[in-house]
Length: 464
Image (cartoon, rainbow, N blue to C red; front, top):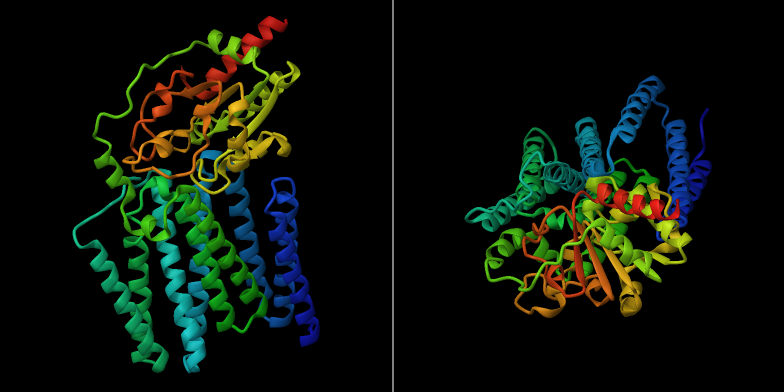
């Protein structure tokens, strides 16, 4: 079956519309699943039309679909929720790798390129290579394969700048003279230098900044795909890549704003190392007030309103289901329950939303930071589960703190704060949390899941 250009373009317009509507629906937890499905349908339509129009050997395509589908299904079923961020990093990396290989393959076949095609070819290879190795480093940091601390050495910025300048000069030479054999050698030089830049530009970034890095790498993968679309003259790939690139940049900006830091500061400051050095002072003063399961039960049982504030500790403990169960019990007891979500809680954008959605927490109960803070004074109890830096009052009160100015969920203003934590160890920012020493704070030490199960047992024993 062959398709005319009119039919192909019409199908691409429909796919584009599905992408745009799908992205729009992703802006709300209530419609995100349908938006994801809508975008998937758009991509399926684009792939089918492209294959029908290309006239290629379908058995290789079907083999690739089979292998990829099996690998995707196994990965999706086996991945833990705590490992979701590194899986997203892998997706970003493979997207960049696919764009790089596509452009490389096209150049290998054609070799005689116009100036514009040479430009987008080298651009796709450059961005795709950086995305691939940068994402692999991000995956290694998130999964613990390599240290999550910033890796900083003398002259690092100069080396990165020199590598970038070298790649830029080589790319310029390739654009002006892409013909082999010299053009091919220059092309390979750009590719290798870009692979190195991906590593050296990501290893100085600490684990606390991974939500920003993942967003940025997602944008890179989209830009690489957009450039690859120009290389192979495929309109839908150009559009899809542009949408991913733009949405990734917007998300990166949102993440930076949530951390009160510029993108340059995230990429070049070695934030984690600087904080560790500055955190050696006296730290917050006061008395820590531990609480037992029975103590916390009586506090919650008497509360008219409770706000849960989830953090990475919730994901580590896999406590999302028992949190929802406790929330249901509190609601049955006449308590108003909400879940306050900080934009950078966890290890990737939307990490806490994904966890709570998996536990079937009602979307109406998810409250963003900007909405919960104005009414925090009226909240009877804030239950902080594994969150640390995103609830640290030092961001508001201590001008000398490395996190000063970072927007936080202002839990310290609630009438009572229950902090569920394994120990007094600091979070990714490497500084002590002043919230732990507030007079209205009670520390409920232990594994979050076991602690919440103990609370549920207390409620059930009373209602038995």
